[in-house]
Image 1 (cartoon, rainbow, N blue to C red):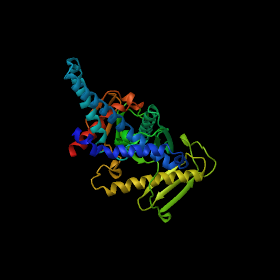
Image 2: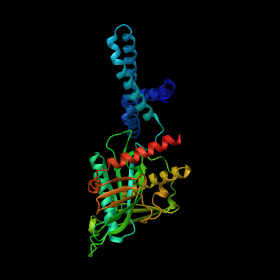
Image 3: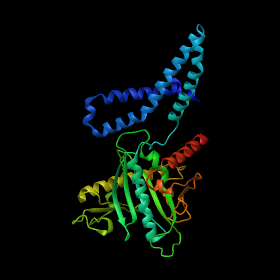
Image 4: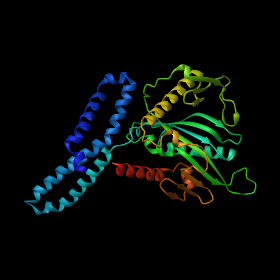
Length: 360
């Protein structure tokens, strides 16, 4: 398998593309087109791990061939052969993994929505806990987080919140590659702050996530399909943060998708940002509808925010987190809610990779 993938017929296209991108990046004229410069830089960064591994593999193969040749005349070189053979095998496997089919959106940034569900005020408080968890995780990875909109409950929870999460540097494994498995219903078991008898309650919140590429492809949006409302921005607890009607809500009537944005300073800026998010959502929806086998797409991430339809449970009395899709369990819920999600996300990624390889 590794020999097939690393053969010249399979790697030549990657080498040619990388050389072409390198030439483009060295052209001063590229910097006059920021959008194209971002696209070229992003693709160059995606190919960097492949090129690095291929270069190491080529050098290891040369060293192995030289050691075998020298061993024929000098037995002392024979001792180097097993180690070099192992190195070639490991690098071949690594290159095979890098060249395997992957999600085309893995390097994209994301828009993430959190919505409260069953459980009233407790569900809204849990939704805010989830939003904070993703914000803390993003901060740990040096990503940029922007709260595009938040509907705050009486106790300071989130009835719904929309976050934009972006990596600061182009990368093969971007925000989407790490957070794409988070869409679905999240269930919490704990004693609510509103519970006077100390009883454990179960409630739920939903997470919806979709990729937001640097350059959203052209999506045809008919102005007559939009209802645009403006209103006064508000902060946590209902505190006014703007004395003008600068917040914008856009409803796409054919699909029922609603996008709101109040983070920017002016109504025009909020409208532009909301249209960008709407375009990304419509693009994501169109892609999923075009792929009949994409059963886990946007429409099925949250069918109903119901306790029975859950991907994960957060059990506070036992400090336990359970992901029901892969049977993952850990007793470090406090750390997870503080943004330490890597062990869980690694397990989800490995399960997805194994499923993709099994399906080939």
